Image (cartoon, rainbow, N blue to C red; front, side, top):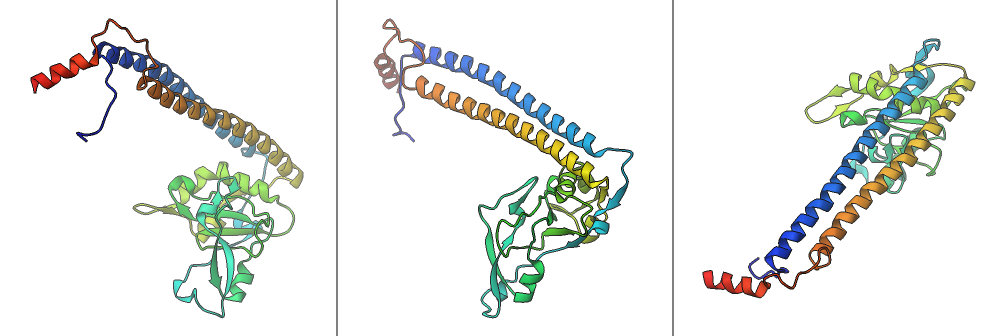
Length: 280
């Protein structure tokens, strides 16, 4: 640390640099506060938009267990991963199942019995729900669209396979990700560090049952809201990145002599160093 070299401008210039950094940063702090306020307004807008779409007093209601076959996934058994009688298949983990989308960049594989792989294979239209983790992640999920052939799901991811054709899977999933989020938070089991749902609770999840045409209308409206929200979120993320870039740029200019003007009348740093050496 004692040998680490630092730039040393004259003392007065140092003070001008500090004052300039504080002024620039105060402006950036104000912008950051405005961006955070916009973020909160965006979240409030999303909640109010979603809530209104599912709070229809004229709609009848049912439960997930009455309209779908709900099933848990595979528990990883490390002892049998080398078993030659098992087959290797891709499987979804909690990290893959996000709220409103599936993150499939990193899909791992697992070895299971052939009959187990067949019984747990996901089919397009299956609605996925996460079992647990942090409380705000309970029940989050999305619809499987057959992106990975032969894919199954782990035990912390539930699969709801709708029976019949009375329900749109995207309607059910969007309802779970919006109106259902508070319901899952209220009904999930809480341990010291984790929250979780069990099969019985998930089957009792209330689901509105309007006509299929009304469901698809709601899905269309929700997609519009989500696209608008995603666009605004992208703008906010870009603003945050720009703020961070400006902070780095200001500091780079500050410590390379480009942020404030230099004054030849300032006492040179060499004189300051001589006084420091003499005092030692």
